[in-house]
Amino acid sequence: MATAMRKTVLWIAALGVLAAAAAIGVRLAVKPQAAEKAQTPPAPYQNPVFEPVLADPSVIRGEDGWFYAYGTEDTWDDGTAHLVPIIRSRNLTEWEFVRDAFEVKPDWKDEGWLWAPDISFHEETGKYYLYYSYSTWGDPNPGIGVATADRPDGSFTDHGVLFTSESIGVANSIDPFYFRDDDGTPYLIWGSFHGIYGIELSADGLSTVGEKFQIADNQFEAPYIVKRGDYYYFFGSVGSCCEGAFSSYHVKIGRAESIRGPYTDRDGRDLREGGGTTILAANAVPDQEGRQFVGPGHNAVVTDDAGGDWIVYHAIDADDPTLITGATRRPMMIDPLIWEDGWPTVHLQEPGTAPQPGPFVREK
Image 1: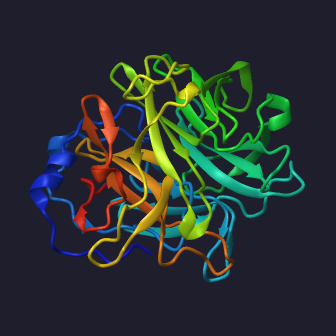
Image 2: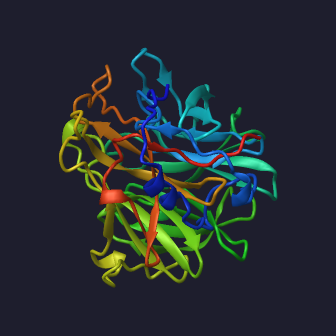
């Protein structure tokens, strides 16, 4: 249920933000429409856009025109356990629950949770692909699996394990991200605090090809990449995701001229050697209403019908940091991405807490 939206907004500054050019690497199953057709000013919204929790969000616009978001397995405050919950929205700010991606957990692992799903649409097969992590806390051999569906809301058919930490040779192999390069080559990027790696995938997306390559060091997890112009922009999360009000999660970026890297930050530092420019971190102080969000991260990027880029992520309300189970409560947030001198950032490098104009989205 999205938070109630307010009516008062400073439109002039916000519309300047929304005029930013679209990122090329955005997940779309349908092509965004031309900007001039998005004529109605967007309605205002206020973060968070979905509660109580949708951690590690991955977003796609389906062929039906709806936006769909997928989140980590969690037990919500009504006591219902959700195995990769799917929510949907017409405008990216008002969301409704649809169903879970899985009715039962995949059987290729004896125990664990389904974390950090990644959704993509593959034109060759006409199917939606859901790559997901399967792990326990401190798991010595977690893995990444893949499921497919004909529709973005499922149901999803599991195809089993893609690889495990032992088979791929990377500890804590979770947090998958699918990327299709300009030449059509598909890749899976993944990793969590033991290096961020990439590997080529088969044409059907169900197996790996060749050798892995490293693009970032042990400080990162939750990789996400978009292509803009000549550059590949890497987003990764740093710090602790899940310590309630004490979570230190934040987002750093770098860019490269090849999907394989090397990725460097705004100061030229290699992301494999400690580099990374912070673009999103905790609110430094509470706002006038006492609202303060900490631990923002594990982001996706989506583009609206006017070409504006939006960062989608989870964060933690410092005054309401846990679910009834005691797990960290991580509602879903969105904010405009601002492009400055060829680099993305977020206003004040903090979660937006005030009402602001929402994305430009044309009704399908």
